[in-house]
Picture 1: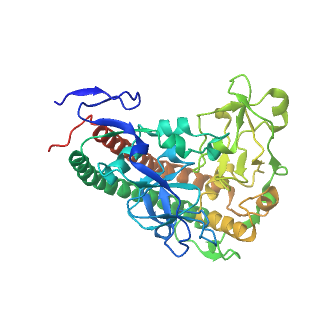
Picture 2: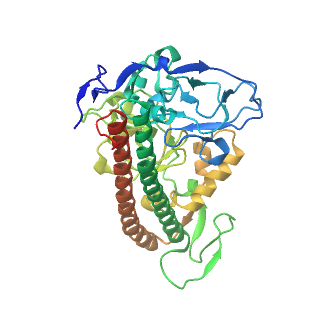
Picture 3: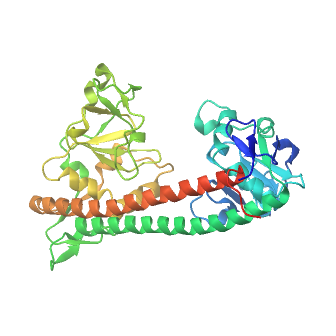
Length: 427
């Protein structure tokens, strides 16, 4: 076992005695070359590093019509998203192209630094809290890592031959892990599609076999069971849709009503338990939720998502970016909740977003939402069936997501241990 020494950097800890510690500025030079408007636009991802922007369909940042002000990146340049460095958005580029002028671009100038080693080192998990500490700004979305602070961050360097061995080892291992991660993510998406398909089939055609169908009268709903009817949501409401409270919450207190906000609702309609707030009584009185109230998110990342409140969650009020729907006995709240997870509900949202300049669904639009009404006895059957099927699929998804978290954690640990010298690649 090789000898170790204190690196002098608390968040790095022990390193091999032969390794050097020096400020990053001894190995990089800031650059801001522009006027390459015809070059390929690149994107920087936390998980994937630098890739061509058009190689992925999950980047919704709009490229400027005039890219002459974008920064030029050469193969081997270090690129830093100064607003998201603390998340790991930093990478050495394998591509030539241009990036947003808001990014830092650096040339790696030290011949004793193997560029891909620096890529692994600066992206490893031990560095992220330091980027966070050095970033300035009033809120997370406005944080900014200044280059003068970034360039003084200490880096640890073994000799270049060992850097190359570390990179070769990590490239092999990370490629293997990434393949399993991608398979796991694909599997999760397939289970989610299966769940949506099961829900869509049940709410439109029911769960009873060999029944006649009819045209729903709405193109994106298609055929429904002959006994079913389509009504607008406003006709099955017990009272008018209500917007939530705009007051500020207070630290969670079990003696006060919980304050359910749009950020407390996950994308699959669950309630988070972290970061809970309460609302003082005088502010909460007009917004206290009743058992089986359905909440709709009207804007933000969760726009269109639904949440069904159950009294078992404890006394609660709801916030201003949510809309409450209290239903008549004609439609079971649980069935409406499942309906919002169907593909036809997704299609309805798309129609709204095509018409609107911003992704916002207000009470006026929710009132016009077409909902499918089955006989009440059959609604109960469908809810019972979907509860069983969705719990089964959700259990499979949860297992896959746990595996995904383990794989991602293992990969981070592996990189950290080798780029800090805690483990040694055989010569």
